[in-house]
Image (cartoon, rainbow over all chains, first blue to last red; front, side, top):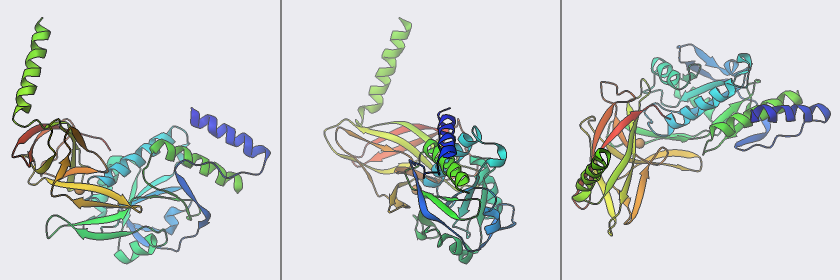
Length: 201
Length: 141
Ligand SMILES: [Cu+2]
């Protein structure tokens, strides 16, 4: 309800004056949205996943790996709550997509990722692929990841950026959500960002 | 009357269970593993009402082949898990193992644990005491 009022208020304000950048709680907006060079990943169905798949809708993206039992499920569960919250406020066609990019293609297969992400939200998509292609995307976003030693010799952990990236419907890097994440704040920030973007078109 | 008696019995049992150590563990839960996940995490709160600093030095569970002690830290936006040889519990203090911080980390067993299942953990401390705790599997982020 508060979100709807907030939206109404912004809609009214933007109707009478040029749009002002929104006051955000968690998001860091890029000074200007950053175009992304194409990349070639594989989605959870084993199909190509490229820059084109980021276009036409907003996309929340999180980067991690399924062998991560603490931070990654916490973040994906949080993103699932963001999606459920937005579902109460948006038409299905206006919903953002939620994307999990596995930076561990050595262990995470598309089949595994399909089941893994659907657990958190049925419409979540996942992507992984050739290490060079993952890097081609992540280096444009400032997303970092590096293998570190696990408890056993044949095992490894991955240190990785904990931020959530927001792409706009032009497939540009639009905003970043740093930790600690709060699902309600991210959802309301998203609605403000989306409104501002649409008012500025 | 009957209720008071059972309350009395309950507190007796609790004090007996804690008698060998003084250290207490509660609120234990295991995050249900998403399908395909090979690792699981468990969380709990350990309280140390004694006058002496204590350390958790090892954890075992019949439900898991291995229980590791870890800490997630986020430094400059990078999340990492650090292996812990022990976890300190200050005198008259407590330590919370919780998402994004200290946690127990276990390889997922072949038979997938489901929300509502219960598993036992045995916590070993540096004063040679041990405390067992029952953890509930929960579907929770
Ligand atoms: Cu861990």
